[in-house]
Image (cartoon, rainbow, N blue to C red; front, side, top):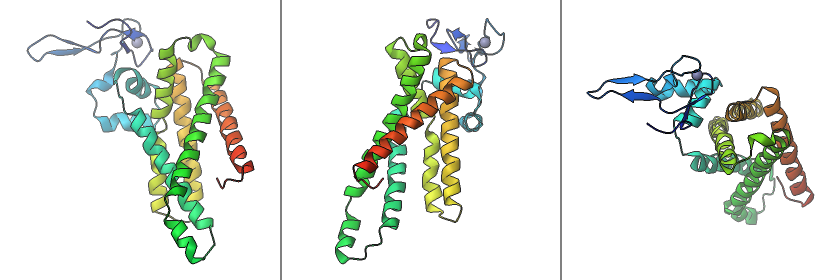
Length: 234
Ligand SMILES: [Zn+2]
């Protein structure tokens, strides 16, 4: 049996040592939580698509399954891919806003440098946003972020819950009059996901995660202002 704390009950957030018990000869029995008397993690029997739909609906149980029990380790790749989507969107907007028809500009257009610059700016903004959230939560609930593993888990939760940024690509490809509205809705969805991820990871109420996100946004916008003061087209 694994140590207590290896998993979490998705209903009451209590620590659990196992998700199911193997009785040999193909007999498996899902574990029942000692605290709430419900299955520790019903999602281990569910199809991944159903789990994803529940995560899109921001259900706390689905978030607990993904963050504590599923042992998913794709946050690094997901983060880079989301940043690439964001950099591509900004790069497109930069080309649209550039009215220069100078032939030399076509060469400049083809340069990859602008894309890398946008990727760098998007990365710094994302870092500022996450640092702002960490500072806010560390100030409000220092007892929740005592160990290095607490920080790592929160970082993982924030990166995984930003998966909504992948929607930027279809929003740009199927360009239409409602694109600005779509981009705003994607932003709201990502922030709602982030809030739910913070709430589930630290077992907080609804208010504190939104406050932390607000401070993260302030720091992110501060970084944007800094870039603009430096004369960079963000
Ligand atoms: Zn329970």
